[in-house]
Length: 212
Image 1 (cartoon, rainbow, N blue to C red):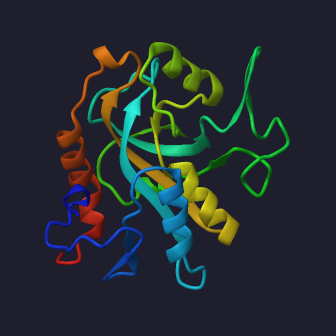
Image 2 (cartoon, rainbow, N blue to C red; image 1 turned 30 degrees about the horizontal axis):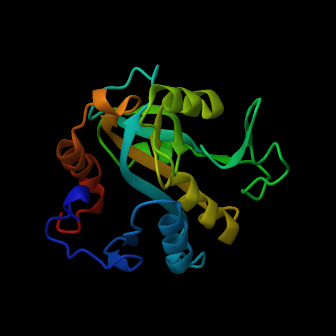
């Protein structure tokens, strides 16, 4: 819970829910799409929950203009590596006729203002790619940008939104990320993981502070 500024809170078990005063529930999903979608589906109750937000860290993509510890409020979460590899290039699943979201797409749009109203710092708005295969080469990172137009990549956001939208197509969704690393050639990557988690707590924690 330190990463969300809740040093006085007890960390819930994976896929469990911690209910706070003010109608906020926190779910620890674990890393990756399967954990994220499974935990969301296990906990989400459309009779109780009006919105679902994914919060965590991300790697900046080339050409984004981002810096380490920058904050990103997603206007779109997009699956970055669900598709078909062909000799002529990558074919996303929606182009193959198997889109994941109810509208047949492989991405969903958010109103970043929902997340921005919860925090008190400036944030970049842009797309966040949800990947299983993180970009450890320049070619891989460039491919994510080409396929998705995203400014950073993480591993959960689109999966959280997908589970939520399948349960309730009208539910509000969002994604907040703090940049913890560069992408591309792994030998040249720069990391600030601990600092990014601290930054996430400073940015998002006040919205969860039940002690005033």
